[in-house]
Structures are given as C-alpha cells and as structure tokens.
Length: 599
Image (cartoon, rainbow, N blue to C red):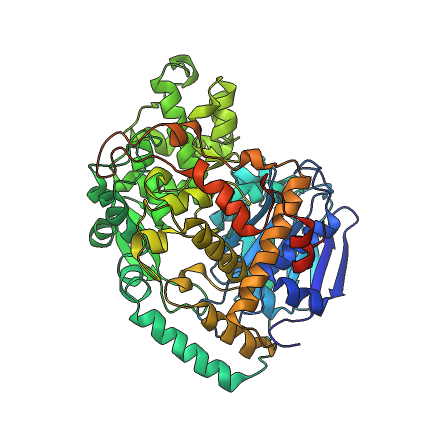
C-alpha cells in the first residue's frame, strides 16, 4: 500500500487486549482516511444513541494518506467519537507532530475501546504496544504530564494527553499534543477521560511508501510555490499568525463582542496580530512539513505559551469585552494547561458575564471573583476554576455555555449551534458563514467550511458577504472539500492557495490511485452524508440547523455592519436542495445509494 500503512491498532482498555488489524484498503480509499475513515468506523461499530461517556463509545484517532508525507502541512490527525457537548459525531483536528509519529509507527488509525479500571497510559513504539499505569500523572496539567512521560519514552517520542478538565469530564475538554496543539472542539478530551486514559505516547521509525516519488516532488514543489505566492499563506499568516484576522474582521463589523451583543470592538488594535508580534512574540512555530509556520510562541509577564491563535485571542478578548493581550495570553495558557477548547471556554465565560449583567447569576455565587465584561484578571481565574471544576458555578460552566444558560432559564443567551459555541465571526454580516454554522455536522464551527475565505479574504474569488444568491452552492463545495482535506491528513490552511485539482494530484502521487477534483469532492460529499445519517440516528434532527435566537431575529445594532440580519431561513431550503436532500433536510435514499453510503 502507498500512503497508507495498512494497519489499524485496536486497544481495549477493559480487558487490556491489544490487536493490530489489517486496513480495509478499498474502504479506506472510499472514505480517504482521517475524519472520513474514522467516521465510518463509528458508523459501523458505535450505537449513535448511547451516552458519550458509556464505555461502549469509542475513540478513533485517525491519520490520512498524506499524514507523514512531504505534502505541504501533511501532519494532521483526527479524534473521532460521540461528542458529550453536542451529541453529534465529533471529529476534532490537530496538527503538530504527533499524527505523523503515529503514521511512522505503522498505523493508519488507533481504535480505543472500553474503560480501564484505573488511570492508564498507552505507549507505542512500532509493533511494541503497552498499557501502563498513569497514577503518577493523573491530576497533572498537560505540560507536567508531557514532561513527566518524556522521561519514560524513547528519544523524540511524541505525547498526546488530556488535562484536569478531561479527567473531570468537562464537556469542553480537549485532547492536547506536542504541548500546545489541540484537537480542541466538541469535548473529545472528556471521552478520553471517561475511559481513564491519560496519555498516548508514540514513537515510530519508518515512513510511509510513496507511489510516485518523482511526481510527488513536482506537485509538492508547485504547491509550496503557490503557498509562498499567496497573500495569506505567504505573507499574512507567516508574519502575524492567525491573529492577523483581528483587524480585518473587526473592520468589517463582524467581530463578536460581549457575547455577540455587539460586532465591533473599539479596542481591537490592542489584541491584534500586529500588537502581538510587536510586544509579545518570542518565536514562530510550525507543524510537521509546514511551509506556512503560522504558530506563535508568546510571553506575558512570567508566562510563556504556544499561541494564542485568532479564535483564542477573540474568545479571551472581545467576546468577554477584554482589551488586554496579557490576559488573553494567560487565559490561553491556562486553557491549554487544563486541556480545554479555548473557543468554548471563552464563549462560556462571556455567556456567564451576560447572565451576571442581567442579574441571573448572583453575587453570592462568585466566591469573591469578578464576572463583568472587561475584567481580564477575573477571566483568567475563571479559566483555571472551570478546568478544575472548582466551585458550583465553575462546575456549571464546565458543562458549556448552553447548559449553563439553560440552568438559569435562559438558553437563548448561549451563542451556540447544536450546543457548541460559535467562533469569531458574526453570521448576520457573513451570509455563507452563517449557513455553514447552522448546517455543520459537529455544531457551531468555522472549519467545516471556511466561507470567510471567499466572503472576507477574497479567496479563491471575492464574494459579496451579504449576497444570498449562490451561497448554498458555495457552502456545499467548501464543506465537501474540507471533509476531504480533514480526511487526507493535510492542514485546511493550505486551501487558501491550493485548488481541488492540486489536492487530487497530490493524493494520486502519494497513493497511486488516480483521483480528479470531481473525485475528491465526491468523497467529501460521501463523508458529509455519512455524518449526517449518523447524527440523525443520534437524534440530531434538522430542526437544530439553526442559529441562536439573537442572531436570527436581531439586526446588528451598530458599527460597519449595522442593520444586517441573517438570511438563514431563506437559504436553508436551497441548501437542502443543493445537497440532494428532501425538503426536511433528510438525505434521500437515491442520494445515499449514489454515494454508496449506508442508511
């Protein structure tokens, strides 16, 4: 096999059995790898109706055929499971080096089953796999855990782990790897914690075979050239990191502020990528085989940390009304240490701030901490408390913004879709992105179809962000292409410069299986429909394809996008039709049959 390693590693924590299995090659090609292949395993093996913390839920950690190859930014892996936050099928993406290392160890995917009777770690070095006691690192932060386990591991091994938030089953818990990289969204870290699994340490010693090395050199050289020449991947991201977006999004008047009550932050410059680079940046960082190097490493007072990324800066600044970059960096640091999704944590804190502002959360619940918009110091302390479930209110917040707001009788104050917190773009002023939020298979998410690219950045072409015509078609294309990218093992950021033809050429050179642009979009369509069917079986019906009440009914109150409203009600039926689904949003038997997706 080329690109693929031909093996799956199945580890059952209940009976401590370890079993390598042969990869089903034809099925892997059909679902590509990563997100697609992991979702197919979930579809075949996990009852969608079970509780996410039931030992029968599984964790699939899957690489793609391009993971660990010379393809640009080909180092990604996915964590697929049932989400405790949303109830949907979750597949959280991470970069760094851990995914490539799993591939070097000889595995395309790792399937984790059951539940250990006490905390354990998994150590993998090629064919040698062990389940070891984790009592000495249980309760430790992610950095403490990584540093401790590296003492027990082979040289240059890579560590994936959870922090206290995952151990305490926070529905916002992330899976962390390489210290500062996160499979962040949907609470996947809590499922790991529910199985008493603390960490997976991996060291591999062989690289995957390439079908056509000479052609791959050519297409990689071409792709790297396109990435270098592109204004986003060749200039903006390398120079300022993802936080280059702060001023760009704010100037459009779609930078959500104070829990989406406003959309323009007059102190945005204080937390911009330019300010970060000038005052707080220590160095740039990159992931495996990545020519972009958008990662940042920053320092605020005595804290040094990887990041923060744009979404994290926003969540810990404008979302909470905070104009202090130091506070955003510290909150990001503690979120990583606790092992939590920065978007969900920041939005949950901002929801709590609005609940307090409106008098629903009382002073006697705060234990002396502040909870007002703009209070950066208290925001940082709440991050720590949420991670440790320290106190009744922090424990409520660890459940996510929807359950927090619902507990006070006001779920409408949670800015979430399918109970997952929305990221840093107000959908009322970006119509395609709003449609993508509502229809995302894992709840509120920007990276299931990044319509910011054409609607704001003008890539691959500039679209009027308020125009409705054609947006359902654009959303479907972006969702399908993203499903392929997530599955092949490359970084989504490459799509700023690369086309579907480029991905097809790389996939063909790596695997030896001829694919065209149409083929990879069809694969993405197949993956999207498989996820949709799984969600329907889990009870996630089309009535949940919606935005929060505020974002559906209220116009943007002020700023550059004043008066703009969501057109979701008009766009959603057109999107269903574009997908080939019925008018209720259900994939038709003919659609599923054409794609070869089981019903």
